[in-house]
Image (cartoon, rainbow, N blue to C red; front, side, top):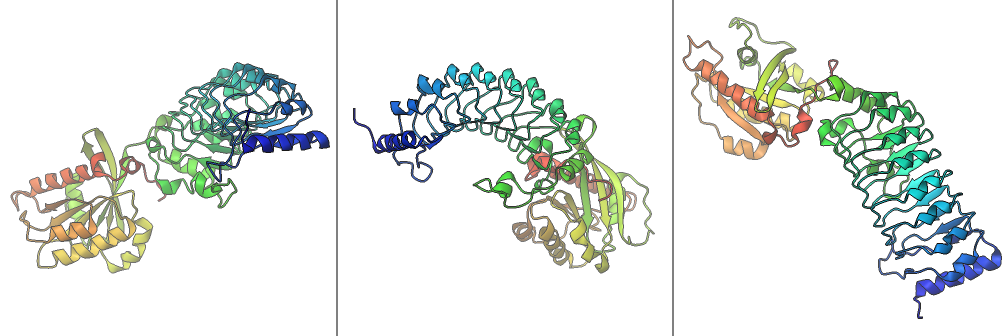
Length: 457
């Protein structure tokens, strides 16, 4: 039978190992560099004679099965069969009782054989990028595990038996279908790295805060958590790079979790709260307009706002009420240097422009440019105020082209209805525009808006 170049090279390496009494053997292919590089499709029978082997590397070949004589490798502590074409693992693999490291990633496995539960000394188990949809309960019997990597599968639940993995230090489960982390996660007291990015998590259990050894936490790509990306720090790729060598420090898990739980209600459910920032020049009528929106008593003789006023406001969205904290900025020049500390992308903006005179378009351009310098994609509603409810001409098309998305332009009047018929309707129109800006269909990343701003912000 004719054999390819990879087979002949393997035979040569095996002969050398036999003559030198080697305990380590590398029969990996170079397919990571060249997909067409020669690879083993079967193993030479001579390999069975290396019964003293402790480490065997078969990475990157095209093996579809393993020969039964593998059970003779009683001293084997490390086996790498990553990136082959295995669809099943043999039951007898559980007889390799001295295995400490088993790498079976990047194959075509849909289940793990129950016999693996006998690998009581196993410390590193990697089976990422296969096709597993569920994890067996017996994995919890591998109580010596330090590293468990199962990323890029289709797993939706972690077995309760994982509570017994008391030595586990690194759990890698990103790119799966997890909807929740179990409460018992806090019992894994030695856990230092938890990587659950790109799943379907909608909440985190409060018990996760008890993981005192945790130094790396990656929960990116779980939109159901409603967390802005900037609160999560560098991604796992940015931290480790392609070769898993740490490139940059991760964000502190405590900092991430403190922020998360400061934005949660009971049981980790995201509170439907947001920040509504009101900006514009002084004397444009911002404070009076806010009072009209929130139903607060008006005072037409009130002096210009100095500093920032914060008040509550409820938006009646289609999917339920949304509580807003309205930040009303004074329009003085002295405050402009403070904007970089308060203007954030995860907010809804109300720009109030006085429409009396001919400076409305100029003022709108100034403030929109300022908003976009800090919040490029945040929704903006423009109130053309002091208009007597009559909108004057303004080049909205050009402004939207330069500074969109702008949810709406509303001609408003903050005078009482008795002094200006139609004033109440203009306030209702403004409220509707703000509601539209808050609803998901108008948001570039809607769920990230519905987070409470911490009280000390």
